[in-house]
Image 1 (cartoon, rainbow, N blue to C red):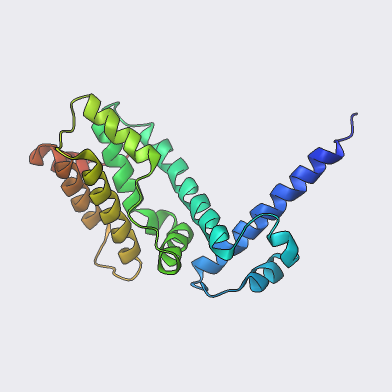
Image 2 (cartoon, rainbow, N blue to C red):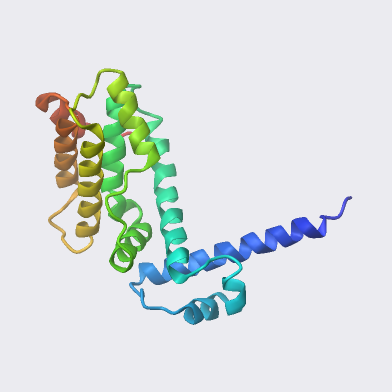
Length: 206
């Protein structure tokens, strides 16, 4: 049996420490404790402050990593649902928007992380590479038509980001409203109103 090389063990320990710091930051954001200092974070992770700076340049840098980790968790779920779609690229986009809007129910911790980080460090209506790729595929297939695609992408992404952060404190913004918003987004992307409404209210794949 071959022993693990010291360099590999060191890399594993380094990755474990980085992930522990990200998990601590995520827990703090999920609890709304955005004012925690680096000392607070390292104390809760049980690492030295110097170790923190081996991985992150600032608290903001760490919070960005925590948000990215949360969004990756959500994206993995969304991809699994989209994989069961009919093959229509427009439906793939519709499912992506609807899954994103359901974050508060399906991923409450990750939703809190994204929402609280936005208060501390404005995230803006960023358009993910995956969402942009899905929309472009639907445009290429002739399913979407809009005059200024980039501006429309910003409007859709920014609006949906605002909806999920608002849903935390406003129970009236339920999943039915999310689906209504999805229909509006599909119309903005150039889909016929009747088809957009039908697609946005189909049963989601399990």
